[in-house]
Image (tube, rainbow, N blue to C red; front, side, top):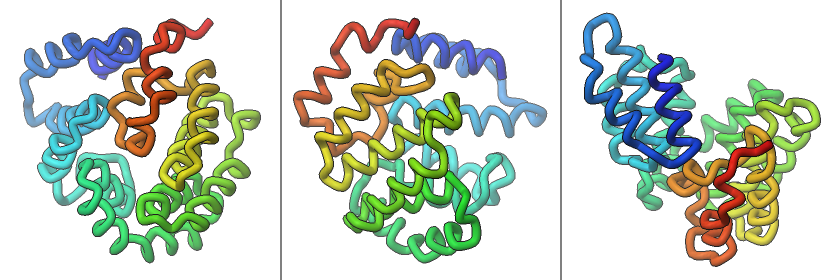
Length: 216
């Protein structure tokens, strides 16, 4: 696992994919490491924005014996394929289950994140904004400085998909200066920010040198 983390550190710092690609190229898949390698390939595909590859790798393990995720969460992850119509069809079918998860686990940040994402992508604006508000109550950065910023990114993404682009841009701008917040190279590839891709302010954030510098 450490070589994967080293490769991710290089990607986070410079956007370089060479270290990770070289590790995959030289690492032979064996029965002992197959589980770890499939999970690593899925994660790497998502980080670099290759959603088709991420789904292909998920399909290598249809019985969900590799990923340390609940089945409903793994199914919901399929929307990262990057095909909006297909994603909406899949998430519409899953929406009742996502609502049930929130009802069963009202304090689950993950359940609210998936419900908020789904409603935002489906155009259910108020329901998405309700989830965004709930996430802010469940795990503010003042409560958890490690995981909190990641939740804030989800909230900003929900705002972007619901048309609240000014708020989303403002929050993303802030998160570029927060430890464990936004990373240029991950944001650039993440389908979560598709509604902002053509916004000059978003492009300016990605090209701003200070957002590529280490946070001190």
